[in-house]
Length: 501
Image (cartoon, rainbow, N blue to C red; front, side, top):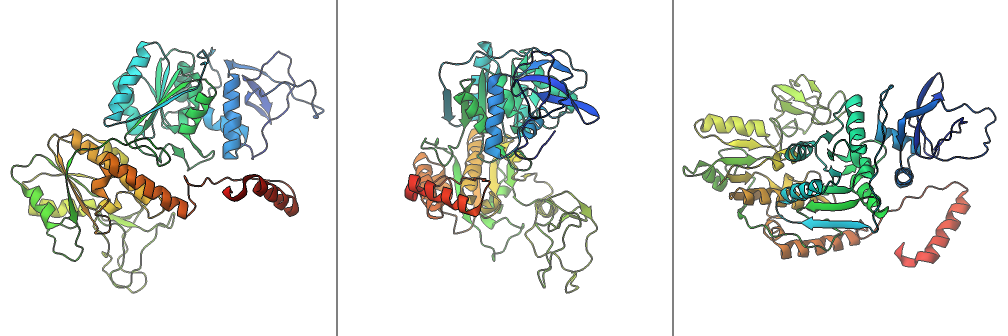
């Protein structure tokens, strides 16, 4: 069950010799629920204690498993029961006996990272070698489509949020008992690393290993690193782009590319495609052309051309887009009738917005029905999908590749662009990037080791100027007591750390 922060345990009496880490049935209200023994005491402040009903599947978690849950609870300001609930989810009422087989603890912490082209293939090869050595491996990846790829390549199961309760329980317990030698998971299964010999981190980018939508909020990579610190597992990370706080070099990407300055006021036969790029797509000797466009559906957002009014979703108040003749919400997926006119000035033209991929496809097919082009969005899955050999690739608006404007936009933009460029290089194709004049100087240097290092240094200085991570770490402190006591604590901290805090 989930409990408020600070409510970490309940006292129960025991007629058996249960140990910390044992999974047990406990009476709760009018039924029973699963509990984990945290510690044993000789006495309790509670007078009439209920008694533990019995063991649950003979399941036992190690001391390090308890330590990991306590560490994560402190890191996320979450109660221990809430941590265990997020890990175990639902569980079968009549489970089979589960004898967990824990790997031998290591003598030292083992962590290494590899930043290279074709990092995904390198991870698969390293995982195969570990399996051949009879190591139990856990692959931690941020995206479900990559989990499918890893599971298929290594012929091992996957643990994701899409599994029902029964399948989820069987999957992680089969791994914990050693019945399956390997497992692929997303951030929801990072805790399963406590049963592994070796954890492989797939790091295609730096955001989606983080659990930000629901409590507890955590970075799955930090769970793996904590297990390494406990000498429970060996951790190997593979990726293309080192994170901003790292001093490791990024590999150079050698791809034929062209920067096209986007002229918004210029003539364009196909919306969002400049004339130079258009002529490339018409080249009769070309291989398959692939166009990446950041905007879904018909329009980015429905907007009145006269007054700027925008219709909102009835369910979540997000601005609506146009999709298949209906007003569609990109946030919650709700569809509702298309407004017939502006709700403010009664204008009937709601098309003042950037055209989406559906409109580009429609206009292209009207003009060139005999020339096939592959159209893709810029989601992680579509950027990841392999390109045809010798492909001519066009990115219609590089500035929109990274999403919202914030202090981290250039970081996301750089990493997404390098992933796309590496994919084009692997396909031996060519890449054209339509971009604003303000961003045109960024693309070329990002592809080289030296350019990436120089940009990273500049980005760090910018973060330092605005007091953002990684130059400064934000620490959240919760305290009980009076305002005077809190200020007294702050003064003592300032004396210890001086100007660094």
